[in-house]
Image (tube, rainbow, N blue to C red; front, side):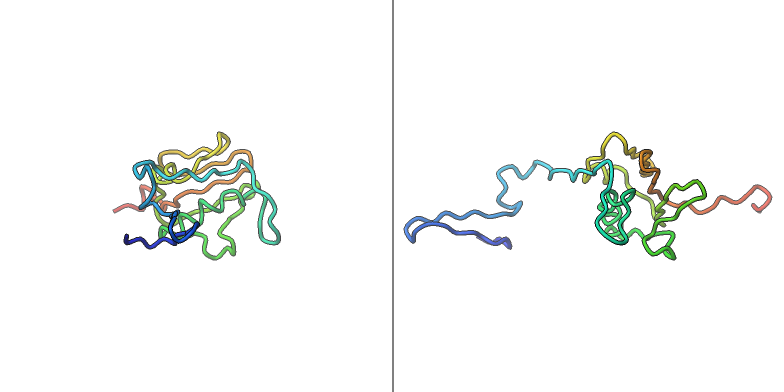
Length: 141
């Protein structure tokens, strides 16, 4: 048996029971992996963790792992605050909404639209793809 997972063996030498923990030995390999639930509100985890944004950290880490880059790289944590107190996390690349829906279970208070914009109205934060500015009509050739 070629498997990269670690088997756990129990029992006597004449009775060998092996349990493996990998998708290769899953009794139903066609079943999609469970979605990671996203909490409706974050919790304080210490210095540098905001209760308004902590619950969205797994989504941001997922997008960063996909190669998407923060648009506001000069902000230490990537979040930008506007004059109204809302927090924004912008990415330079597009956000695939279908892929996020496959991996995460969002609560009703967090809206993910088809363009990939994530809006959390309760905490007044959003995550989106920062599109390049559209030139004005007088700027076009």
